[in-house]
Image 1: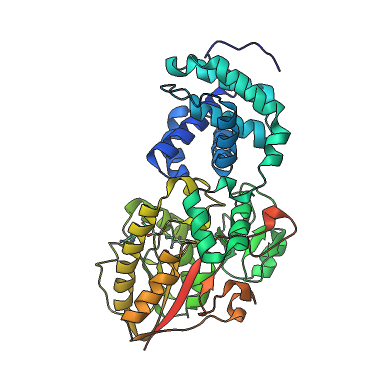
Image 2: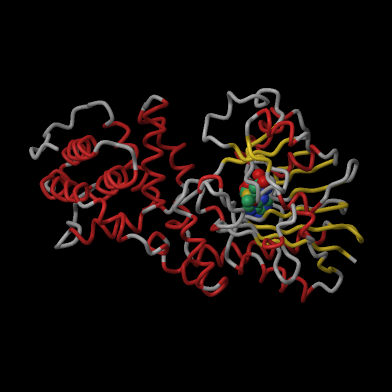
Length: 443
Ligand SMILES: C[S@@+](CC[C@H](N)C(=O)[O-])C[C@H]1O[C@@H](n2cnc3c(N)ncnc32)[C@H](O)[C@@H]1O
């Protein structure tokens, strides 16, 4: 690797992708916003081609997946800490470290582009020598850094590690944290003939009926996409509707419906589904998704805490949550969500649950679910709800309903999937999202 520092900030191939990657890392951490939304908002202004945009996203997502390891490696080698008033110095270094430590990018390219990038801002350009020396050290010491990073909690913020230890015990918490280091699998739900489609797509037919694609690939070119035969949906996310068990002709409401993965499942089973969501843009995505799939739903843009309607045969409440069960798919969640977010969302979930209960006819079903690992957004919600609503009772889930996977059912008969379950010998084909679901009947 050259010892000399490239000085110019002029555009060279690969530099625009690094600019976007560092900007994404910076914005997501500062504003505590989701990476996907930040990417959608910022990337058009960078004018990248598809390959560079994908590279920028891969750098940012890798940085969030291994942020603890990266920050530890950087901080341990900055004797006087990160320089103050150094502008984009830190995000540029984090993006470069993600490439050096975890991505298939030649060290010299990662370092050279980071140095050029540091030169572009007057504040970071003062620290080019420091950045250059540090990144070259990371490259030289890569093996030691990776072999030291064996503690599975190193890439998990402390509040989450504590929450999982308290809820699931040390060994399970460690298994959850370790599973977040691998890229997630890509699962799809099909309207019907899951085994036929698993064969056509060369996927794994999971015991719950979802199909897991063996390769990460562009999905729009795959057989059945244009025909609207299937949609992308994590295997665990497909379970709440299985538990709701919609029947053809039933009136069912999906209260937090967008972008529509679960609405599609309900509609595909022939029920008359009403999809409620308060977000207009997200409902536009739901409409487009249903159109591609040739499915229909009544779409209602309303706040579900106050929306009223005639009671339904069944109600699905897939409530907004901290989404800590999706960290493997969205590693930024770990670094953007706080206990305050969790508690605010738990309060909203309780109000949504009250509203959902009013919409269930006597004898009807209510499935409450969240993609959170935090008990405040799952088990504790239902415990409080049942204590206050003697007219509702739990209808426990049986292993047969979820492909015999009894480890995903808790002692109350609720669904509790954890990210390290559903093991496969290939890490990328293992695991699923952490989901909680409880099925209640109105007496
Ligand atoms: C977990 S996501 C739903 C995912 C969806 N069920 C699916 O499977 O594709 C939660 C949704 O709740 C919506 N939401 C949040 N608060 C709401 C409220 N008070 N009323 C209605 N929808 C709300 C959000 O806009 C978001 O689309």
